[in-house]
Length: 148
Image: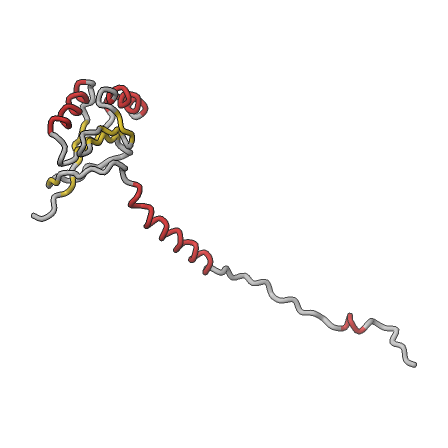
């Protein structure tokens, strides 16, 4: 009988290690980015001011704005909204002063949006209260006129 006293036969086999893969698989990253793009495209139109107002059309150009303005809206039923919250016209100045103090006092820019079907006097009452309280930077918001 022959006995092999040397190294075992298992040790003779040498396993080659696979080389480390140094490439980055970008396919999952592209998939995630496309899904995020679709989500933002769908959600972006929903980020506008929440009070539905049918604005009149003019040929005026857009104003440049640095930060989000204070928005007062008057809908077709004559209801007054400060940003997205409905307020009574009697309580408008108190709440507006609280918001304006956080954004620059009476020098804060205020955008007034009035529905085209609302009574002209309602919008003028709001503007009168604003100017009487010392808010001088009031801008009326309209849509760009379609056609020539």
